[in-house]
Amino acid sequence: MTSATTPTTVPLVDIRGLRKRYGSNEVLKGVDLHIDRGEVVSIIGKSGSGKSTLLRCINGLESFQEGQLTVHGQPLQPDQPQALRELRKNVGMIFQSFNLFPHLSVGRNVMLAPSLVMRQPQDVVRANAQRLLERVGLAEKFDAMPDQLSGGQQQRVAIARALAMDPEILLCDEVTSALDPELVGEVLSVVESLAEQGMTLIMVTHEMSFARKVSDKVVFMHQGKVHEVGAPETLFGAPQTPELRQFLGFSAS
Ligand SMILES: Nc1ncnc2c1ncn2[C@@H]1O[C@H](COP(=O)(O)OP(=O)(O)OP(=O)(O)O)[C@@H](O)[C@H]1O
Image (cartoon, rainbow, N blue to C red):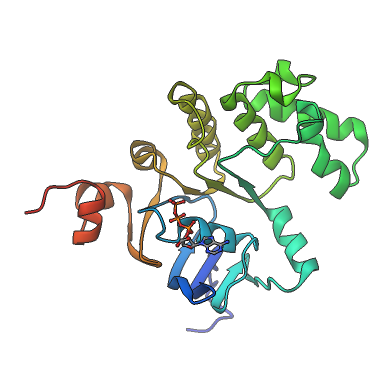
């Protein structure tokens, strides 16, 4: 077998032996995970198990001390600002708090990053922002200010804003946790439509039924490690370890 005749498929995200400490607190204790293009991955686990930290390492918001993290085959080097800027064009992120700029209209929020980074003509950027707002069901809100929107609508604007950079990967960190229950569904249905359209999604979520429904792969984090990983029907239907069984509320056998 030679590499000249056998094409090798490199995972879109490849994480090996990742270790991350905050002072003496080791939060990631050797994480191994690979994610292919178009995969929808949910990361679940108890509070403090390292889920958000892992997500933040993937787009360089957090540095790490040991291991390897490659995106598109490019090693992530948190100490290299130019490499980080390139990475962030490819990896969008949405947070629990929507983080919209309150002094900018909805449309301007979506236009901001492409205006600054992509150097496209304003009418192109504007038309793209309008199209993205349509995609998240907010076409008529272009000129509204963020404080005139519900939390669910603001989160959908945040999704449109992340998509405006045309990322290959979208990271979602508990994107419905700050929402009133009646607003959760509208945000999840936008995320679900992105999944159906083939976007690579990596989501930290407490919405177990949603994770089960949309994921190709579910990752159970426990004490800073990937404790179980697999297809949703396996992970949720036949958990292998006592820790996952307990997390999912299975009664002890
Ligand atoms: N900036 C930070 N400085 C110091 N410690 C931190 C920082 N961010 C996270 N930690 C610690 O790292 C550990 C893992 O946090 P992380 O937010 O990754 O967990 P999580 O699984 O996402 O939890 P949750 O579900 O509650 O959001 C926790 O013990 C937390 O206190």
